[in-house]
Each structure stands twice: as structure tokens, then as C-alpha cells.
Length: 246
Image (cartoon, rainbow, N blue to C red; front, side, top):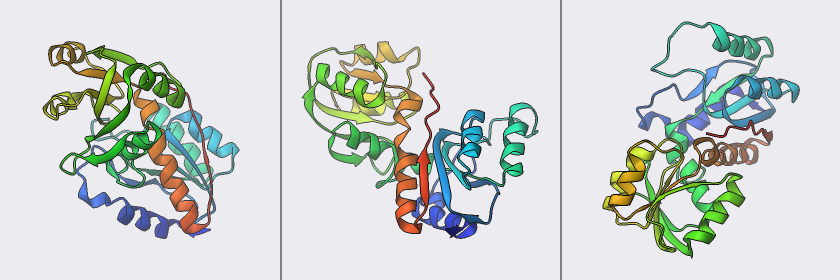
């Protein structure tokens, strides 16, 4: 068991939250029970996840995508009101970590995805959200590995050569980093989504672009964070997958 404020402060320091100018508040977003014993983790704070966490009698929920975003309306109506109401009535804390969880070198989305996909010599590019590394694989087998580990068929654009030795990647909706990936002269750039311009940019620059799913690529950081917290504070945790095809 751990005190809520102690846990919040620990995560703020461990994830270097103050380092990031983000699109949302990182840390405790909705206050619940003072003492935390069981935590549930998930990718996004949607209604399904909250209802399942209630069924599991969780004291806290940890997510990558929380309830509050800078570009959204500040009024609490509709589904946002329902989610907040359920959290408060059931005394459940909601913790959310966005960019700090993408970037973290031990439990971040990028490093965890890299480990799952067998990428070697992983490094962030100039301490940014973009990572790069080496592959001991070919495109066909690498595509099969993605499908097996992430549970979805990736979309492949641009260069289709089977020989691949280097990769850059950033989880989630980071297709906008494709120009930086081209400058790294890697064989593959992998992210979670694709924009209208992405296929042409990949083809014109002899780059393989892989869209592997925003949700699918960002399952792993929050799980790794909660596993770390369970070891540190002797908590119980459960990851709940709420399927999302995007």
C-alpha cells in the first residue's frame, strides 16, 4: 500500500514530468482514495476502462491518454462528466502520463516497443521523442513480428526492399517525424498512424514507412511503469486491454 501523494510525487520525479511542455496535465488528474493498494493500467481513460477498473476494485488507474487535453472544451459535460462522476463515486484515482511516458529511457513507450520488436543499439535522437537503432531482420519477417506482437497487420508504404538494417521509430501519432527519419538515412520509419502525405514522402525518399497502430504501439509503457511501481511499493496491478483498431 502507498499514499496517493507519495505515489504522485514519485512518478513526477521518476518520469521527469517538469521537463516537458505537454498538451495535457501529467500526473494525478482525478483524486480518489488516499491509500492505494491495487492499480489498473490501460492506454486511454475511456469509459470502458473505468467501468472495468471499478469491477476490479482498483484504487487507481494509470493511463497514457488521460481525460483532460489543452485543445478541448473546459466544460464537464457528456461522457467526460460520466467518467469523472464514476471515478469520484468509486473513490478511484486517475493518473495520466503522456510525453514523459513516451520518452522515458527505462519504461517509456518507445524503448518498450523497441525491446518487443528486437531492435538493437536503441538510442533517442538528441534526447527527443524520436528513437533509432539496428535491425537483424528482413522486411517480411519484421512485418510478421509486428503482427504477432502487436496483434494487428501493419500498413507498409514506400520502399519494399526486403533488406533492412536500420530503423527509426516513435509510437503513437508521430508520422510527422518522417522528415527527421529521412535525415537519419534509416531503412524503416515506424509509427502508429499515417497521414495523406506519408506514402508519397516515403516513396520519394526510398524509405519504408510502417504504420503499426496508435493504440497498439502505446500499450507497453504504462504496463512497464506500473510493473516498476509494483516492485517499488508492493502494489497489485492489472493491465486491461480495451481494443482500439486505430
